[in-house]
Image (cartoon, rainbow, N blue to C red; front, side):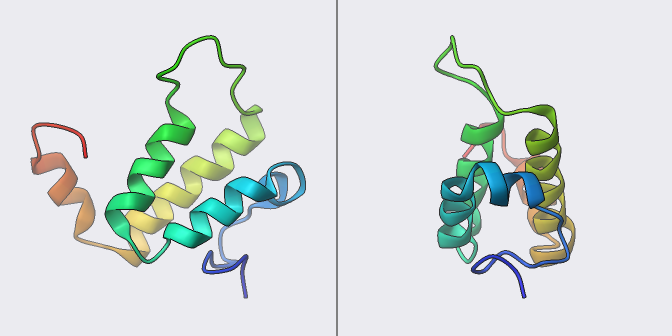
Length: 88
């Protein structure tokens, strides 16, 4: 079992301990690929400026979770994203 819809195969210890609200948001969007990837981009890419950002370990967990989602959960999604000329 994982955290909500997030599978336990992905290690999310730092997120679970330090940012459970982030995992709540990810779990809520897990079944909606477009919304989940938008959320992941918002979490990983600072577009507001002057933000401290996540610690490296948490960024690594988020990145691994995103990669797992694209490679294991929605296998064909990466090609669809790369084929688009604009982000979501």
